[in-house]
Amino acid sequence: MERLRQRADFLAAATGIKVPATAFVLQARKRTDDGPVRFGFTVSKKVGNAVERNRVRRRLKEIVRLSDTNRMQSGHDYVLVGRRAALKLPFDRIAQDFEGALRRMQAGRNGNTGSR
Image (cartoon, rainbow, N blue to C red; front, side):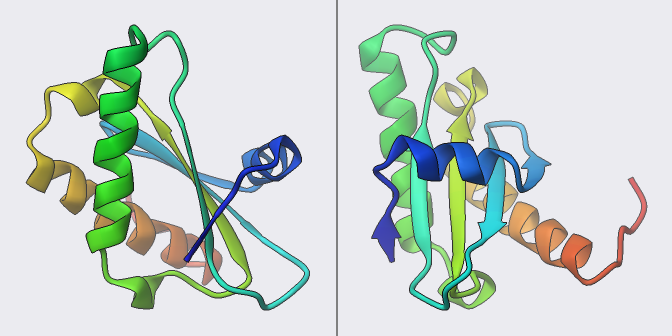
């Protein structure tokens, strides 16, 4: 898994599929190549001061690191946009939300919109 670092990559991912969750918004975009999965993390100043933003970012990075990589498709960029709720939610709940967001994203790609 590689990291997104260029602003243009983050902006491109923002134009793709978006799946909201309590602690984050998951954005994804299919690239033109079949390279490895790339992840980006962003937390705006609305979330809090630098200490709080870094804490949210660290929690999101750890969730991605521990997650099952089978759900992530090669040739895709994923961006996790942190929300303030990530500061208070239990780590296990955020991990469950991440797995659920990946499932919903794949269901949306396959044309199964499901019920809301």
